[in-house]
Length: 196
Image 1 (cartoon, rainbow, N blue to C red):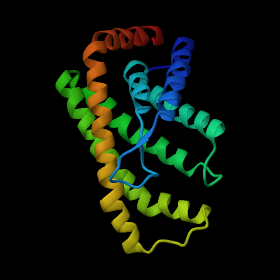
Image 2 (cartoon, rainbow, N blue to C red):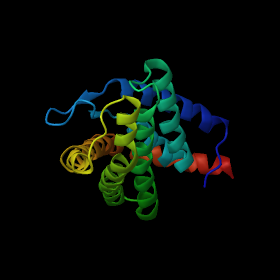
Image 3 (cartoon, rainbow, N blue to C red):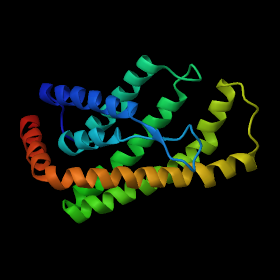
Image 4 (cartoon, rainbow, N blue to C red):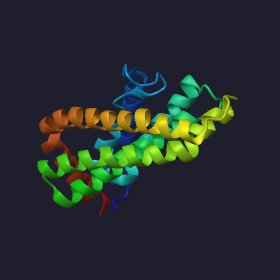
C-alpha cells in the first residue's frame, strides 16, 4: 500500500472538496423513490484511489460525507444516509481499484467499473435490508416495515437503482479516464516514487 505524504493529503483534501460539491448536485431518477439520489461524488474518490492507493479513496469518501453532514445535516439527526453513502462509495471504489491494479488496461478499467457497480448494488441491497432501512424507520419514528415490504423495496427499488447509479458513474468516469489516463498513470507513478 502506498504511504500518504503531505502532497497526497493536500490532493485528498482538494478531491474531497470537489466530491462534496458533486454530492450537492444530486438528482432523483423518476421511477425510483425520492430518497434515492444520483450524484457523481464517487469519481474524485476513484481518482484519489488510482493515484494514491485505496486509503486515499476511502478518505475522500469519508471527508465528503463528514462535510455534507455538517453543512446540510440529516433528516434523522443521525447520519444514516451519510454512512450509507460512505459504504456505497467504498463498495464501488475498492473493487475498481483492485481489479484495475491487476489488469492495468482500459479493458481492466471497464471490467473494474462494471464489477464495482454490481458489487456495490448487491452489498447495498443486503445492508439496506439488514441495517439501513430499519435504522431510517427507527430514527424517523416511522412504523417498522415488514420483511416482505423491505424485500419488495430492496428488489424493486434499491437494487436496480444502485446498478443504474453505478453504471452511470462508470460511464462518466470512462469519459474522464479516456482523456486523463496518461496523467493519472503519471501521477500514480510519482506518488509511488515519493512514498518510497
